[in-house]
Image (tube, rainbow, N blue to C red):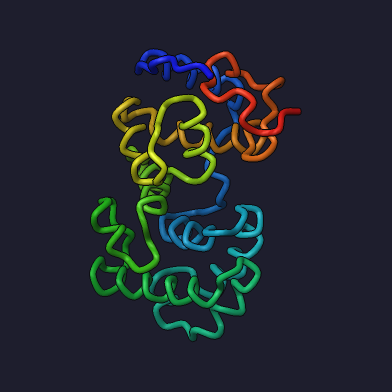
Length: 217
């Protein structure tokens, strides 16, 4: 196994190649405003973006803003989001988050990490999604795809999402953070999968620290 020391220049060259490979990489959660993105990201936990996008149109038809969600009946929200899984906890988080937005932020989604992660149901991953995609502020989203590929490329060694986020933020310039996550997620879904890594088709296989770690195709 290769043990190349990864520099910022090396990582950026790899990132450039991945961005050329996936020019369509973007936030897959359909949204029209920060509130919709925040709610959709809460729903995306342990659920596919495709499923969330099927659920949110009806959800936002009933509850288009934090004020309406704050006043919602828990059972009504549960029924609308049932197919996303863990719907009881997610419904509580949505109502709790909306209530906090109305009471503490005048119904507006805040633009600061500390304020976002103080909201019910919101962790650093969700906060970074909102910062990067709703407000165009630097946000390094670390989900399972990002963490896995960052370790395979040698960009990070941490086993926790927060640890990987910290290492990636040190390695890469802030203006690349948001798109880095999109690109790595696309690469993880289409090529560098957890159990079946398509190494023979990988555009950056020559820069991978763990070639063949999955069952290659």
